[in-house]
Image 1 (tube, rainbow, N blue to C red):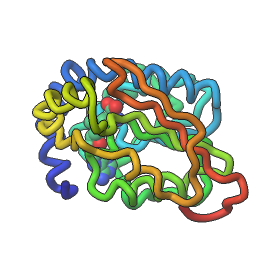
Image 2 (tube, rainbow, N blue to C red):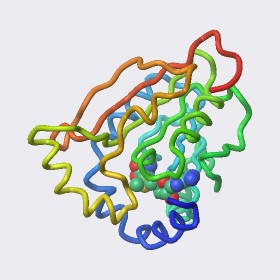
Image 3 (cartoon, helix red, strand yellow):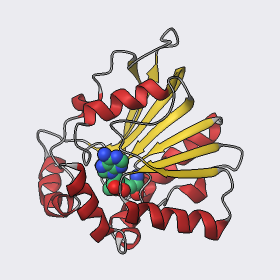
Image 4 (cartoon, rainbow, N blue to C red):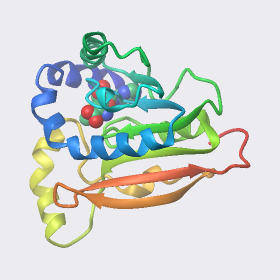
Length: 210
Ligand SMILES: C[S@@+](CC[C@H](N)C(=O)[O-])C[C@H]1O[C@@H](n2cnc3c(N)ncnc32)[C@H](O)[C@@H]1O
């Protein structure tokens, strides 16, 4: 999907996102934020959306959040202001061209975004670039399955996913191409094991690049 299409789609979703898709995917958000809080340091959340995860981050973290949709970001900023989240900074950015230096963050996170963005490979390469050597890229997403009862359920969920401009048949391989990243852990969680919590570690010897 082109960036303009993302903008149009999420301008429509912003007012209802928290009560719909946002609500049913909260398990993954809690899971990721608990994990990241234990790691500490500097975090970048790519595709921060309406900022549903922001209240869960420990105040000891330094949190940067970016998103392409002004409407989603405005919601997130409202949350930051209302809750006085002084450790969170938000900016508008295309995830394919992150305006941060190389090797900058301890953790770089993307929840429910890799199957929405145009050129997910480029997004993961950027996430890898801005992650410190030895740091981690954390991805929460639904990835396609070939067969079985869950594969059927996934097909049933396709209309909702399509409304979000989400590709329900998105294969995990598309986020595994950065040469400096390797899988540190991978596991499935509710609803119905449809979501995956994926941790990719950046090679400690990699000073530059994805
Ligand atoms: C399904 S929402 C997920 C939001 C949030 N991560 C969450 O878990 O609630 C996908 C988000 O990705 C953002 N997005 C899509 N393409 C993007 C891009 N190229 N750069 C930055 N953000 C993008 C959308 O604006 C939207 O906020």
